[in-house]
Length: 146
Image (cartoon, rainbow, N blue to C red; front, top):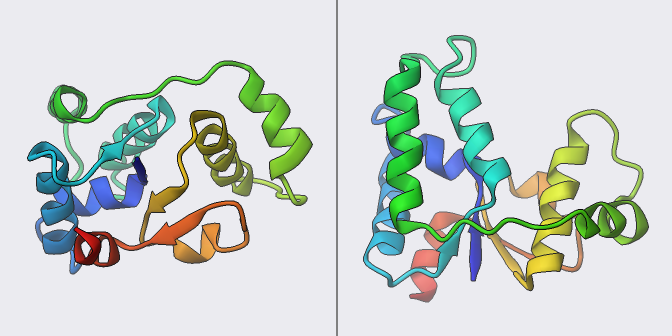
């Protein structure tokens, strides 16, 4: 299984983004079951928050449209929910002193560990490279493996 990070989903819906095509191909690979992509609820919430925010998305989606996007993603992505043990993993094994919003990336890694997921697909490689227990790949790298 490969966790698909929020930024890949955002690029996939933003047709003017330079990374749109590669992100769209990856999402289509998940739809076609050639890419074993999964999501956590956190990823879907982050996606909704970004695509509805005028400061972060040049042409923000209206909430009903964003909800439809989330539902569409849920229709073909397995969405894995983790229990509270991920907090124990987060504060016991995963964090390396992250502060501020860095804790959310560390929490994704804790959820990955709890779910047995070894790879994250993201363009924010610098955010995750410090976590030695996971493999970090861009959409282009994932598609080259398929």
